[in-house]
Length: 216
Ligand code: CO
Image 1 (cartoon, rainbow, N blue to C red):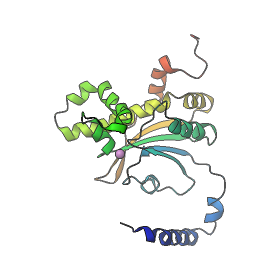
Image 2: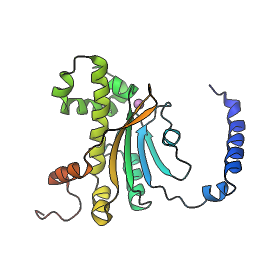
Image 3: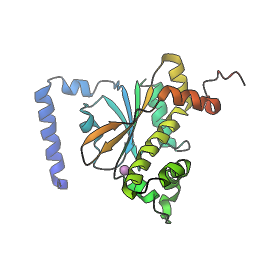
Image 4: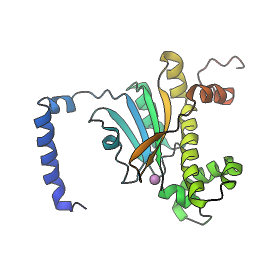
């Protein structure tokens, strides 16, 4: 663990290394950002998104919260998605969960968690949506891992439900939405390969916000 007093020293070392690798580092850092990726992940300290993706400053726009949730009345995540899509024009939106997620674990335990109840409710709702599949998994750890994956899938669907994403995709065929899980035991990212086009088509039967719905 790095002590608090070491952090500013580390910062100066980091800067020196970056400048040694690229003389234009600071000029690039202070220029306007044009990231291709929006990453929505868990707040967990063990999932440092830029490091595991090998990306540099300026390449990824980031939102993190407990258990990587995309909730339609959360002004924070909705503002991030809207800005990333309409102002930055990101090409890809990634929802990344991780195995051993404390938020998902807490949601599997039927217990009053105080202020966390309304937040965890979103994950309990994912369990309810997929109860038949989850209850058929006898091994508790395997069930927990599967809920992590299904939570990512449902949060991808929540991203696709937004007007910003639907309208942008209709206008210029991006962004596309991806669901990933980071495995803390192997250090590897797993692409869940969600069917973006299929999900979009399916949810637009109910959630079409492009303004082109013939029924209206
Ligand atoms: Co987590």
